[in-house]
Amino acid sequence: MRLSTITNWAYGATLILTLASGGMMLTASSAEERERAAVAQRATFHQLTATVEEETFRQSEHARSFVITGNPAHVIAYEREKASLRSVEQRIAHLNDAGATESELTSLRQAIHWADLLADEQEGAIRAMKAGDSKAATAILFGDEYGRELDRIAEQVGKFRYMLDQRTDAAVRQATDSARQWRNMSEFMLGATALLFLCVLYFILKQRILRPVVRLSDVVTRLAAQDFAAIPPDFPQIDEIGDMAQAVRIFRENGLERQRLEQERDADHATRDRLSRMTQRLQGCDSIDDLVEVVRCFVPEIAPGFAGKLYIHDMRRNAIAQACDWLSPKQSLEEFSPSACWALRRGQTHKPKGELIDIPCEHLDRERPAPSICIPLMAQGESIGLLYFELPEENAADRQERMEKYLEMLAENIGLALANLRLRDVLREMAMADPLTGLANRRRFDTAYQDEVSIAEQMQAPLSCLMIDIDHFKRFNDSYGHDAGDAVLRAVGGILGDALREKDCAFRLGGEEFVLLMPGFTVEQALERGRQVQERIRKLQVEHRGEQLGMVTASFGLANYPVHGRAGDLMRTADAALLRAKALGRNQIVVATVREDSSIVA
Image 1: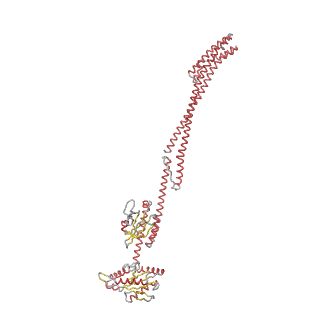
Image 2 (image 1 turned 45 degrees about the horizontal axis):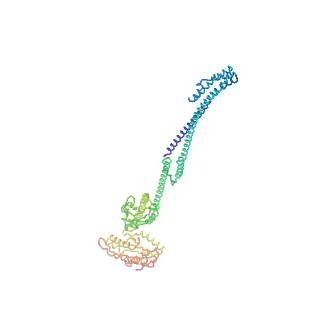
């Protein structure tokens, strides 16, 4: 019940009880007035009857005094008293007006009648006394009969008074009882009113208002201080306090929601800031290794709790190879075919588990597939890599929905950076590679040569250099044309490109001149490798337009650090050995001697 309703009911009940109590007090007061009126009426009756009785006995006294003394003054007084007497009805009129009943007045009338009869005897005694017969007068006024008449009159007056007293006492008792009852009822009503007021004070003001308001005040104060951990009390009653508690509860929920939104906003700003910083770092990467390190550092901070891997498409082997991982992912192979991932097949984000059931990728554990996301790294419509994430077990769906846009932004930025690096590598390779043979060109050789020389000198490691020149190359151009010469160069370049396991160790310096840099090779090892290359060149069968071009041979000059001098002079020493091989008849390997100005035949 609402407090306003309770208050109205309490107010109405208090008003009714107060009015009833007031009415009862008025009724009790009225009863007391009736009691006082009855007492006053009895006093009036006593006074009036006393007057009637006094008049009778006063006349008798005056008559008796005259008989005894013979003094005429008593006769005069008697005559005056008799003259002042009125009729019976006139003498009882005051009693009738005062409320005497007819039966009571009958007794009084009888007494007055007998008093009037005594007046006749008194007059007879006075006449006898005047006539000188005092004895007769004395016999009349002092005789037994006269005394009995006086007693009868007194008895009738006493009867009248007794009847009056009985009726008056009954009226007084009734009025007293009625006043007492109404007074008790009034006191009860006042007590009920006071009790109701105390109940209202305790149960409504204290229990239903003061205590809940104090609790709500504490909660509101804490909520005002942004302490949303304060839980509003639950007041199930439907009243104003319940409405206030519901309003405070809604305010707290709105505050929590606003706080959550602010936290999400702050987290979003922080995540976007990390994305921005990662993008800047990605733009400054010079190699795939730099990119991988940036990804390994930033992704766990941008997507906390999302374990995952970065895969890069190896074009030569057509395989998706793992470049790095973070937070220890439990699934997904380290290497797999591009067709094993549905995200790479479709070029779209793939989620095998979630609200919409989908097919798990082949590179995952199909028996126990965990919630995961595969996001392809795209560049010009082609897949160049893959971002793989495993969703946290707690609140996987909610966190996935909140983080999915950031994961896609990650993939977009990483894919763009990876594409830029690959384009840069392609352009670098184009600038550093010989377009005819596919080997590194002279520019690339100069850089690699300086690097290898520096490493060899620092590590005191052996470094061999094998200079190669195709014998009588001009003959192929003159006899068969430049296309035939290009075919010979491509064939020799292919042999040299496969001669070493190390990448970028075979170079075309220009024309028909080539060089092999062999880090870590001793003279004997380099000589053995040179002989293998020489043998493979001899076995070449080059065709041009369906025609065999004949045997192809080459001359070799070999130099080694530290056997043949300083590392910085290694190329010049090998070139001198090559010139010596050509001077000695070509198609042979010449190893440089210890002295820089001479060479020997191997």
